[in-house]
Length: 583
Image 1 (spheres, one colour):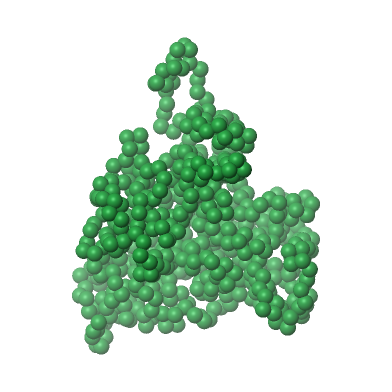
Image 2: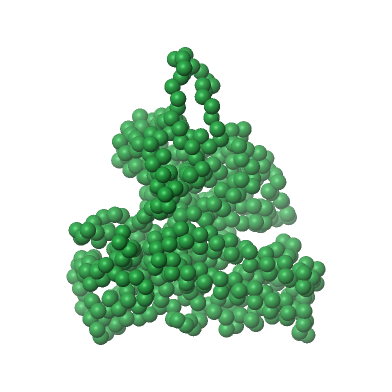
């Protein structure tokens, strides 16, 4: 690529306008991170939910704003190639000492994708690869703080760690909670190890806020050993703070960052430093997922797609139709060597589905904006994704042509998908139950019902509750992933089926009672869910009340009264108030 060495004043102004647009965007992101602390302190849980929704919308708003400005002020849509290449080089110059260069590159790509034709989406014009390193970027305040228990004692060190977060609300009994933390760590380690000269505790500077909790995230270092931990801080009913537990198993900490939960709000000057620290305690977590979970979803998408392209370059298997029952709204395919599924909205839905493309997209957006309570899979949404045609199985390509021709473009060696959702792959619950042992069926059905209960408490009614629309994760949790019929609980009308005027009417194929759009009859659930005797027995043992209108109406009443449920991303047995006999 040859680029003129004569600086183009127009390119310089465009580059400066783009970096100004990004800086404005990130100032707002940090505002949400700081606001999360205030909302936590005043226990404004509805405010937390609003802030999460506003932050998600903020990125697209700033991108659209910047793209519109570039087109209006500088005629960006009609610039020549040389100018665009200079814009990119001058933009890179703005990133040399920037605190968020990787995010700024992604912002550049997002703005350009609004202006440029897809043929420009390669490394000459956008950042197909990172151009600026994120290593060793100085941060103020620092990414993490270090504490030295050999200097002041472990108990006082732990107390200082908590006090340094400066929450403007008193603790119920911090000394008691510190004692619980020390007792739990002592038991986990099987005794206190000999303190080495480098003994220290490193704690991320900002707490991680989500729902009704703040999380202290850190690790202890002693010699060559490292021990990660997470401490959730909650409010008591009286409005004081408590340390609820300490999580010490890396896999439990990893579950905090599951994409089936809401994103954290965190105030970070250097987000790459936070991700690097988090990877040191969760090395199996892809960086893309960590960026997403700390509220930087666009960066997560960018890194995911780069990882996918890298995987395609180093593998040979083909995309195939996903196993399981075919969806009536979505066409699903997968790459066996990659742990994700790819979902496309069909052009024509089954006759029983009363939705359209825009409705389905709105449902998927709703899922990103609500508390997923560990029971709904997050999705990455992409537009104009070019994948190598030779990696598609022929029967998959043929089905795509048949069920979604408006979303497929075959362009030379690529298949371009105009709109695509990507989710973590799970075992469909119906397939899991087909081969499960009696004990596995019992646990899976209990998990299934618990997922429905927790979603209902979070104001989500799944709509289509068939087993095929739920998946089993590697941790044997049941998660919902089919969203085209979800509704807010508060928009549903749960009814009892009225008694038939004549007994013969119960045998009729048509209902003898009127049914409005959002009418739901829980007693009907048994008809289409409980055909298998083993499944039926487990369901009735744990979840008989889900077939009763009273459960649903009671849940609605709690939501409408303003109650925000507590959802713990760890077992109740680990909470200090349960495990250690406190009240």
